[in-house]
Structures are given as structure tokens and as C-alpha cells.
Length: 455
Image (cartoon, rainbow, N blue to C red; front, side, top):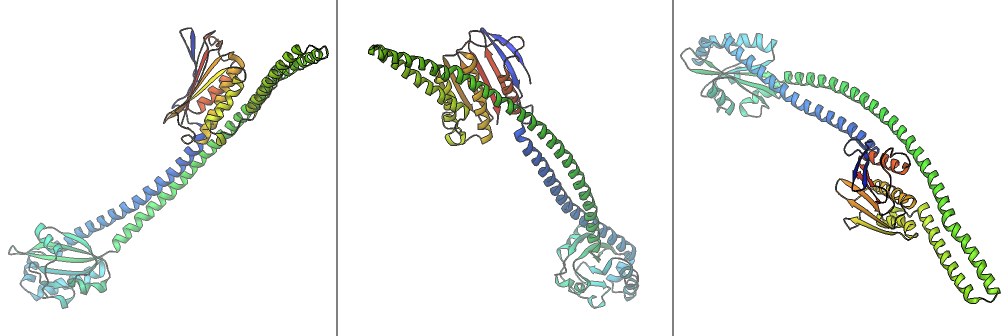
């Protein structure tokens, strides 16, 4: 709570509470906690999902890069320019030498499933499947790109094109890599290798496994953190609930004392006086003084009506009509009846003028009603006012309650907390709702109380 005073034009300005934007209200504690828990879990799930997708793509990309480098190394090692020239010239010995290396070493001991060497015109110069040697095909876009760039290119092939029909029994998909190889006379041939796709699967499984371990650790850590937060939140709620229960008990006891005093000082005293007036009327009737008796009975009748109005005002204060049944405007009008029954001119203004109930949540309406009840009760009990003005202003961010009167005012300087228990309870409530409570008053200068509640 922050409290300060400023003297101005015979009044003292007292700020009893100003917590706008400084604290989270109890009403939002549960929502904030659940948003944190759900938001953290959703963020973690999304992060893991995105990580799996990205990691899978990176693993595939890295496997393709490794396949390209491996194929380029094979082409440089096993198809040097002299061998490439011999294959281009149709030398059978060159085919046999390369076939020995491919079948006995590459296909058996590596992830290579098939090796081919192409001419730039699309003829198969070598294949470890002899049935393909000498067949002409149209150059695919991937082969053309390899010849144009002069470097290895790769893709994951589903083996649907006609030239790959003999590779389909090897399993689909495969990694297909092309690497141009220079010949001794300055021409080019195209080295092709089909490699197993299992490496990509293995890398993906390894990445998924690692991320799964991280996800489990993350979930455990997050669950632990949320458990600690939840326990702290429950402890805070219990302390808060105890404080609210104590405040409610104190408020109920004060209301009972105030009601008893108001009934004793108001309707009870009036009815006692009315009884004496009626006794005087009876005596006058017996003595034949009818005009006097008539005047006494008229006085008694007016006193009874005033007493009934006072009792009704007490009933409204003791058990006001439900805000949800009659609306905020009518509920405020009910709160003003005790003042009006004592001849006080009370005006109520809503800004904007349309009904506010549909724009405010139920809890805020109830809090506003409780605050206004306390403010008007203070006026009734202390102000001795003739005119009271009530303004309720609704904005997108706050609800402001203003009660001003022309009464005897308050002495706010010095230890202002003494004697203003009602204002102190309102200040606590304003702090809880991230709002403020300000009072302008002075002896004989009336009082204005402005309370703001954040939405």
C-alpha cells in the first residue's frame, strides 16, 4: 500500500492505495497458473515436434551429403581418367576390372547396391548388372544437372522411372548419386551409384531417440517446476482465504452493530416517540379536544411512515437484492435508499449511460457493489451530508467508482489510518485488484472518494 497526502484548496488529498499494474490480483492467480502450466507444456510439445521435423530433415540432408562425398570418392578411386577412357572406348578388360572391384568389394562390404557408368549421350557403358550394358536412355534432369555443374548431385529416388526398373528389386527408396568423371582425352563420363537409404533411417532414429530422452527430461523438470509453483500457489491461496474469512467475519460483526445502532437510534426511537404522541391523542379525545387529537394523530402517522421507510432501508442494507437479478444500476439505487430515507439528495450516474452489466464480469460487478456499499455507509455514518453524487465510469481497462458529498469532511492529516477502518479495507481491496483509492477531504469541505479497479 502507498499512502501520501497533498493539501489543496482547503482539502487534503490522501492516496490510500495505488497498485495499478504492480500486482496480480487473486482473481487471476488461478488463470495465470494454469496458463503458465498449459503454455509451458504446449510450448515444449511444439518445440519437440518442430525439433523432430527439423532434425529429420537435417539428418536426411546430411546423409545425402555423405552419400555425395562417398560417391565422389568412389568415382575418383575406381574410375580414373584412363579407366573412364577405356570404358568409353568399349574395352572389355576395363569393364572386367571395374566389375571385380564393384561386385567383390563395394556391393558386398558397403551400402552401395549398384554402380553404373554413363556416356554423355545416355548409353550405359558399365553396370554391375551386365544386362544393362549398351542400352541407351534419355538423360534425366538429374544427369543433365550433374553434367552441367561438373560436380556430384544426389536425390532420394523412388525408382519409378523406366531406367531404374532393374533396381526396383533392390528396395525402395534408394539414394541415387551422379558424379562426372573426366576421360583421358578430355571428355566426360557419368559415374552413378545407388546407395542404401537405411543410413538416413538410422540417423533419424538416433536423432528421435536423443530428442525423446531430452523430452522426457524436459517433461520431468517442467512437472517438478509446476508442482513447486502449484504448492506455493496453494499456500498463498490458503493464506489469502484465511485473511478474507477474517475480514468477512469482522465486516459481518460491524454490520450487525451498525444495524442494531441504526434501528435503535432511528425507527425504534421514532416508534417510541410515536407511542407518546398516540397517548397524547387519546387523552385529547377523552377531553373533547378533537382538533388537538387530529393534529397529534397526523404527527403520529407521519412518524410511522418515516419509521417504515427507515425499516425498509435497513432491510435493503441487511439483504440487498441480487445484483444479477436487478442489475448494477438498480442495486446501487437500493444502496442509496438509507440515505434518501434521511432526506439526503442522492444522484447516481453511469458512464457510459447504457447498462454496464453485460460489459463487466460477475466478480467485478460484485466487488464494485461491495465497495459502493461501504462508501455509502461511510457517508451515512459520518458525513452529515445533504447532497451525495455517485458516478460509476467504465473503461476498457478499469472500473472507477466516485462518491462525493457536501458533508462535514474528514481530517486526513496526521495518522490518517486511525478511525478509517472502512477506508482501509477498501484500500486493501483496491490493492488486490491492481487499482487505487484516493480521498479528497477537509473539515467543512465535504469528501470525495475515488476508487479504481483494474479489469
